[in-house]
Length: 360
Ligand code: GDP
Image (cartoon, rainbow, N blue to C red; front, side, top):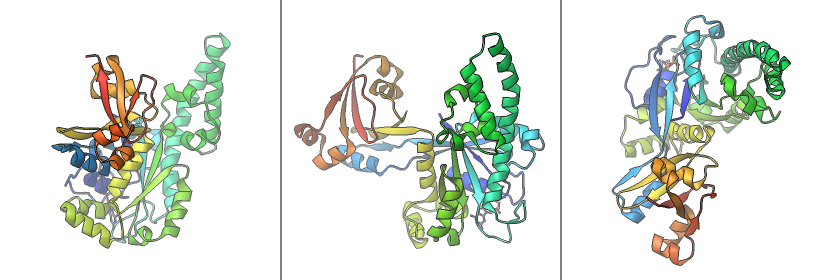
């Protein structure tokens, strides 16, 4: 499964958030280096459509898609030089498919800030600088090797050009992820280097009520990290919410003026940042969301249910969730001509409700 690595300076609320994510009750410690071992936490991707489908089909259970997060040990300046927890940090982050950077914007005199003050721009730069320096090292090793290969006509000049363009971006203090789209970087030719800053970034602003109730402040912070997406949440509140019943949690969120929990927001943004999407199946047994890559074809999607289904794929019977709900039942959707037969070339769309026909 694809995972999102949670990183950030010490004391920004990573453990608090991670504990909430895993509904774990391990106490967050109020000192740097509290989180050393990486752990994986799996959270449900919220999807109200599954509830409606379960009602319509009388499904016994609901199986949502999930998003996996890895808690990665705290980073400090010098990580790229292997100081402190640096090497382990970089190795762990290299395994993740996206990076969620937690940045502290909550005010609390009782919680020490490693740099002595709340400064999101500087915190972000501290972390990103370490990742950028690590990538620069990777390129400084790779470029001379590739140059030699190109000279003896064994390496690809296009790949060398991609490496050099990447080095230039990094030397300017920018991440590959930021520059890739706007500057049309040749990321295909960078893939084998598994650069840290080429991974998709999400920013999690660990906020207090002041920030959560200020659209202006949020807009500033959004602009700071664009084009990366960000989520605003209060990690402490999230940790409290997971201890409550669903109804109590909803009431508490309403009191805070929030319509959705921070964890739900994070799961949603994380899922799309990983380039994933879902399709839906429903029957008396279960209503379920299945995870595929954006752009996957119908046979690929079938293969997620069972690997034999990809090979044995004949066709997919598909109705969009909205059409199905508008019709009121599968039989009515069929009568209205809303249920389509799709073949091997069909590219799955978000909200497709599917039944596969296989030759097995
Ligand atoms: P980590 O070092 O990044 O893992 O940070 P922790 O999760 O251990 O949090 C450090 C301290 O900050 C702990 O005492 C937490 O209770 C506190 N903390 C975390 N999130 C929040 C928050 O949103 N608001 C406030 N006031 N304190 C928080």
